[in-house]
Length: 450
Image 1: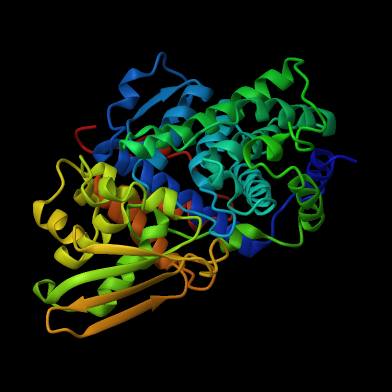
Image 2: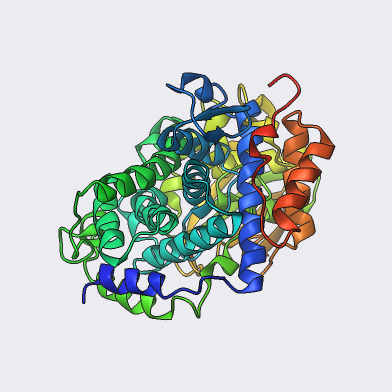
């Protein structure tokens, strides 16, 4: 059997009802994705994207009160969820699951009239597939210059949407093979701080819808899509042996639930940067005492948050700084916090001045990608120094969030988007608290002037 066959067989063997704890966690991740999208529709770099949609349809464009056809709604919503770098991540696989999977399954479910329980089951299945694709070649897609989410997201999304369509084994295998034709998403945006990374998640969600439509219309996909030098792992991770690891990882589908390890984000910037912001906050000295800050950068992260260093120290736009180690560290040092509004408009001159005092050194044995750690040394003007170390990022499996913190983030995002607090509470309660999640109020999550 091929890796794709083992993967699809494992998915088809998943229980009709996921375990209660996984159901609870899945609902929280869906809530978080919706909250991030509605505030992004008001404050993010893709805030005008919804106005470019081509036609109305049954599927909600989040935060706008409008609708679109399924593939276009998935494209817009996935872009919104990912546009603020505020969406969840499974750290070990380095996958932004909800930015692809939530838009794909919500659009497919609205188009087909599927139940809330069906949404949760397909969402969970997609997450389990996505994480295993990442763990088969840990950080391998990133090393070759691709965002793993946009390589693997179309495939995981197609599995999730295919389940909502009631696909049998052969149809799911075709959907997987076809979806791999949509895999893409490179990191060239980093060189000049383009915002195209946001669209990579939206394209993945759109691809999931399209791949299922194509497979349902008779287009077939290769059963050995993962194997060999020209398979997915050979092409995108330069690791053809990862197909065997994926086959092995597929064996515990239904008994090992990786979604439980996915981390929520407390800050609207690259997840690699969160522990560094926490570390500099822990040092807690007046900014005028700081002469130099040295950050140890985990091997494998440098291409995203530290290169080219001169550009990272002096980003042209505040939005570009979402992936800048020196700027985010300086932002925390100067302002005492990292907030949504810090990445809009022009960079802060005071933050740029501090970023110029941030330096780096390689950290080959950091434990990444199993953990997202940080280690810094702050040299002070009196000649002394202080250090701080964060073993893993806040929100990870080692430092999980409870439901209150997730719902608090959702309600804060709704408030920033101008949504009435009672409407936010009504939606979160309907999604989180009922015996079956209720998404019927999705389109009502719009600010007063939306």
